[in-house]
Every structure is written in structure tokens, then in C-alpha cells.
Length: 381
Image (cartoon, rainbow, N blue to C red; front, side, top):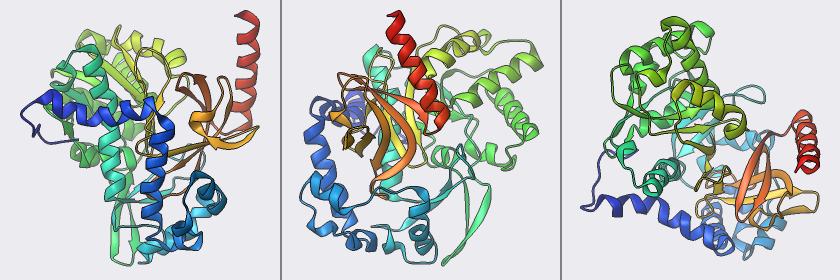
């Protein structure tokens, strides 16, 4: 994250990460209007935006009428143009890095990342931990070390018009570019993770887990942040190989979990077994951005309305996310500085009062499971 606190008042500095978010949650309609204006201004600088009349967009309705909903297959030809040197085809600024997804719905996708995108990863990625520290009035979480269980950031190379460019998983890339917030630092360094190679075989993960254990075992680790199944697998590895639970040698302040549904209900008890009675904070993140995080003890997430534009495709049609009724659900569509109206492949449900729950990936099984869950919940509550 940031290398040092540059303001004389650390609290003032920390609030710069969360105050715009807090303000947007009080008036999401206004915040989304401002976000739309910023996004459309950037889209007008691209061939894609020109194709769909970005310069004529004056309202959210105009935006919906002008720009189609995209998936990765629709974006791929435009990304290829960027790779072959036509950055202006899709992007309003140069490519800073190439990153890959974990491939939860198929093959990994390789995406460009711009400075604006990386800045938002930093800004929004810090919100969960900063919000936790401010709400709890406990800043130890910002001074200890953060366990690094991210995927490798150096996996392969892609041929571009500027020559061969190395790329890796987005989580590792973002960790390498933003290794700390204030006094908090990742342990081990992402460069040490990368040095073990980019494979995700069981053996290579065990090598990473061993490195993490040896490097961090006797350090003052205050928090974990990352992909939930990886953190669980690490804890299981330590228990199996060394016969101890992480809670026996680390006294964590918080655990920040991403990348799966049912974090609080299904994965929370597992985490507490391994790491102790530690607060668990859910984050909704993807390669394409850090989209939402928990605000308080309510076990749902609140969107970053000031950074991204959110829509939902429901049974009533496509609407702004903040207009969803309680218990209404649908496919989430997110506009980012790089991708207008991107169907990211997730289902979202409104819980009311500005809170949302990410149900899971858009699959038939997810839909059936959620319908059954709602039926049973209604019967026994």
C-alpha cells in the first residue's frame, strides 16, 4: 500500500481512505452520478467509448441505452487491440502491467492494468483494514506484519507491441506493487514468493506455505488478508506438518477474507478454529477491482460507490444496485475505469439499508442453492 504516513496527523491520513466511501454510502444516488461523470469522461478518450457515443451520455439512462453489457468474450477483441499497440482502443491511459485471474469459471484471463486501476486497488483495498482500525479504535493492526499468502506475480510472459511483458496473478501483482500501509508490512515479501516459481500445483503451494511459516512463525503478525481457501489450506498445512494451530503462536487483530461466498457463515468457524476468536472482515474483490467491504458488524458488504458504477440485472430488468429491494437478487454489472458495464459473473442480493451479499458465481447450481436457502429461511424464521 503506501510506504509511509506522509501527513503529520495519522488519523487524518487514514480518513482520506474511508471518508469518500462513508459519504457515498449516505447518498449512493449522488455518488454514482459523480462516478458516472468521471467514468464517461475517461471513456470518451477511447475508440470503444467513441463507438458507443460516450460523448453524448448525459445521464444514467443515456449510459444504459448507449453502452451494451459486456462479458470477457465481448471484451477480448478490444483487449487484443490493446496488446498489439492500440491502447486507445479500450483504455484512456497507458498499460502499467498485465495481470491474470485465478480462473474460477474456466481458463485464467489476462487483463491490462492502468495507473487509474492500480490507484483504485490501493485506495479501496486499504479501506477494509483502515475502517476496522478506526471503528475499533485499535491501530495495532496497522503496525504489525500482514501474512502474505498471495498467488505468485510472475508466472509467464505475453507478447505485446512493446515486446515481451511478464505477468502473474493479480493478487500477487497488487501485493508486490503495494507492499504495506503505514508501518504494516507483508511477510514474506512478494519477491520471495515469486522466487519459488509460478506453478499452482499442490507441491508448489506446500513450498510457499513452508516459506511463509519459516519467515513469519516468530514475527508479530497482526492480520491476514487474501483468498479464503488459500488461508485455510495454509493453516491445515501447519497443523498437519507441525502439529500446532496458528493461534498458538500468532495473536491476530483481524482477518480480511476475499474471493468466496458464505465467508461469515461457512468459512468463519473454520478460521476461528485455526486462528482464534478473531474479527473476520469480508471483502468483495476481483482482478477487475476492489468493489466492496464490510462496514461494521453487519455480516454483509457495502459498495465503493465513489469508485465504481454498480448495476444489477434482476427479474425486473437492469437497475442501479442501490435501487434493489431487500431480498432482491441478480447479476452484478460493474463499470470500472477500464471496462464499461462489465458482467463480472457474480450474483448479488440486497439485504436492505445499503448492505449486500455476494451469493457466488453465476451458475445454475448457485441459483438453485440460493432459492433453496431462501425457502428454508422463510420457513424457519
